[in-house]
Image (tube, rainbow, N blue to C red; front, side, top):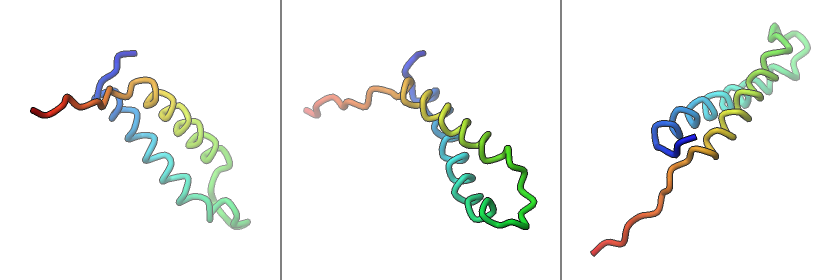
Length: 68
């Protein structure tokens, strides 16, 4: 895959959103009266892991050129 800021942001944003959703769903997972479907945390975890892997592979080279 090509390293670019666009590809990086395209994979980083879903990673952040799915990670935040997982954090928000943790209290619902422990509640026995929760209406949460059991497959939702698994899917969010898979989206998080896949997005993190892609973000790692396409991250741009952040080296700065020396200022003159």
